[in-house]
Length: 258
View 1 (cartoon, one colour):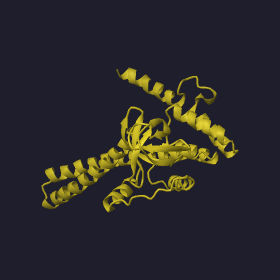
View 2 (cartoon, helix red, strand yellow; view 1 turned 180 degrees about the vertical axis):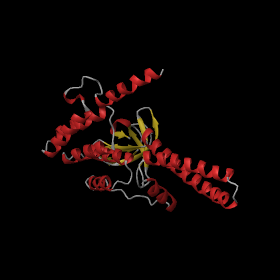
View 3 (cartoon, one colour; view 1 turned 30 degrees about the vertical axis):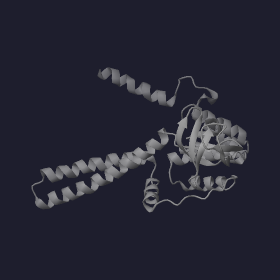
View 4 (cartoon, helix red, strand yellow; view 1 turned 120 degrees about the vertical axis):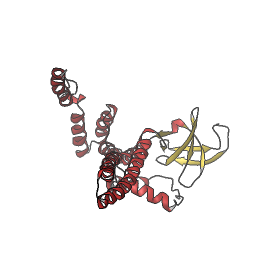
């Protein structure tokens, strides 16, 4: 068994260095990224889009790839895909100032100007705290705090000195609270990434209906690039909510979920 693992590790390592063993040209994600960067720098934004989309289709996701793809689409004045990719980047890197700035610029170019319903203080506080770190960082912090909690608990249970036991007890209480919050933020981030809860309108204009039926009452019109919250789905329809609280139904084909 030891001999097996002795040879397995170098094979795995080579697998990371040479993903297929015979990668050539643009089958290599790094080569694609280099080509995308070069194309973008030279002003060939359509080519950059193709390269970045190819990287994503190969399963390689990162905030940087989505951000750069959003920039390329923005340069082409394609607001819907630009905003979509900025939002995807923000999911992987919450609170990033560059992403937020470019997203704000892109949103200022769309047709719909929707007044946002004010959030409750606790909700704003929760969101701002969650956005302080990416999801992966929260997951790591939850494990670190949990490990420190177990250490503090061990000091409390095993120490014979009263002062050490008090320190261990109060440290354990604080650390388990930190671990719980970190885990909650990590879980929230994972849920956001796995469950498609939002969407971006990709049609120039679409009529929002009162029910999932083309014959139902017209409520209002949304335009390309507007963000919506997905609340329900039925057949080929989605129930959406916009920033001002208005609710209605849209054909699923008119938006791109994330």
